[in-house]
Each structure stands twice: as structure tokens, then as C-alpha cells.
Image (cartoon, rainbow, N blue to C red):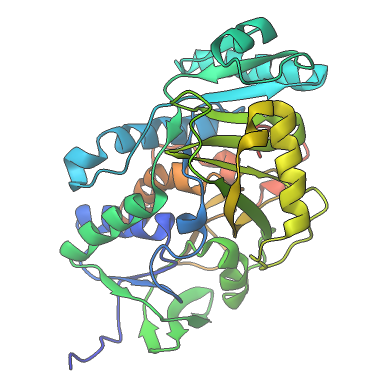
Length: 384
């Protein structure tokens, strides 16, 4: 049996899209001694349970930039990685019922167009003409991003992981981090269920468990896990394909195609922070009510399964990305509030630049760890 190495130049905590992307870009850019540790199997938690949405329609310019870079990666993924991730540019359709929401949409469109994002502003009548199955009598309007869409999160993250392994990254699955050693304000190593690893750099991309990992290093970050439930119908052909990602913003309900099925979900404002991922049948009924209200044809659809995943949420719905000065060698990217999958390629590259170059061309000020005391900072408005 091959003896386990007890040292590494870089240890990555978390085997989802952030961890596998960071591992790939680090190895691609020349890092030769990288270890990725995952307490379960790769891509089994948040990434593997997500609905795979990819959009440029954000309100915050920093998120738009992350999306623009990541979208280029998704579009060329098969050519670079040899994996068909089933990327479908079916579009994202945001719907607004309230006047305040509609005004926010229009403000976001101004920002998006300044950044060359293709986006259409639609009246209720135009929405009804293009998607006749939608109810529109209560809408102020909507916005549509024709380049937006969705892909298979598992295939994307595993594509990164497979290439990272080929480039020499050591992947240790079923290996839980139990502690982070810090001495004189510097990272010295990690303790795991498989033994200790001495390292000067720890990358916390542990998703919902990212706050716990940070606390192991004596760092308190305002990130909390929240359950999000997703439901899938049986094959349903009553809605013409392709079905865009439809987001009813004011009730935080969404649905999209998952050929030949339909996926749907909704946020629950009363849900407390937890690591629970079980499915709540009462909540499923609330989701189906929202579905039938917005698209009455969905009354004919049958829910055949559901699952729960976790969002990691910050006070302003933007992530924390970057080094934490209080502990040298500790770098994190956590708290994406449901946008982690679609921003994974860009963030993996950013982390590699921070570690190997000491800087990045991306403006990370909106994602600074210490921003939360500044009431002037504006977070992301388009969150579901």
C-alpha cells in the first residue's frame, strides 16, 4: 500500500465545484503539491444537489463579472475537458409582481447592459406571447437573458476533479478535517480523520461547512447554512421545449426544464439555519401551489421525487472570497447564497491567482471578509 504523504504545499478543504475548480487551476498553473480533502465523496453535497443554473442577470457588477468568466468556461468545457456537461442556453426569465421589484429589475438591466450582458425587458403581454403557459395578469413585467441557462453540476465538478488528478493533485475522499493548526498567526497544518498534514496554505471551500472550518482556525465569518428543497416531475411534454429557468422573484419560486422532466423549488423565509436536508411534504405542497399559480398547466404534472440541499448565506448574499489577514495562509471562498456552482470556474481561477501570484485582476472588494460592518455596501438583490 502506498504510504500517505504527511505534507503539502496547499490543502483544499471541500470537494465540490469550488474545491475541484481551485485544484485544477492550481495544478494547471504549476502548483505541484496540492491535496484536496473531502469528508464524503466528491460532489455529493451542495454542488451535486444543485439545479445547475447559470446566469448573467445579477444586480451586482462583481457577480456579473464572475458569471461572464464562468460562462465562457461552460461553453468551451467539452473542448477543454472532453466532457459534455449538457449546457443548455434555454435562458433565464425573471418575473416581477411588485413595483419595487420591477424598479430593481430595471436598475439591474442598466448595470447589465453597461457590462455587455444581453438582456431583454418584456411587458406582460410579450411574456404571454412567448410563453403562453404562464399567468401574467399580476405582473409588472420581466427580463430575459437569452445566453443564460443550465448545465449538469456533477459532470462539471467531476470534469475539474479528473483533470486535477491527472495534473498531480492528491484527492483524499472520506477524509474529514477535524482541526486546523495555527501558530503565531500562521497556518501550520490540518488535522484529519486520516492523519495530520503539514501545510502553510489552507483553502476553505467547504460550502455549508465553511464557517465551521474557519472557526477551526480561530476565524468567525458570518456564513450560515440553510436548507433548500427541489422537486422533480415525471416526464412532462405539455410545456414546449426548451423550458427556460423561470423565476417568480417576489415569491422566490422557480422552475426549469430537465428533459423530459420539470424541476422546481422555492425559498422558505421561515426556514431556520441548519444542516437538515430532508424533504418536507408540507413545503412541497406550497411549492406546487406556487407552480400551478404561475403556470396553471403544471397542475397536470406529477411530482415523483424531491431532495434537499444547502445554501450558504451571508448577510448581503455575496460570498467571502480572499485571504483572511488575521491568519496568514488561510484563504476562503464561501457563502455564495446559491450561486456557487455557476461561479465555480471563475472563483477557482481567482484562488489560484491569489495563492500563486499574491494578487488577482478581479476586484474582490465586494467580497471582502470585513465588509459587513459597512452599511453603505450593497449586496446582491437577485437571490432565490
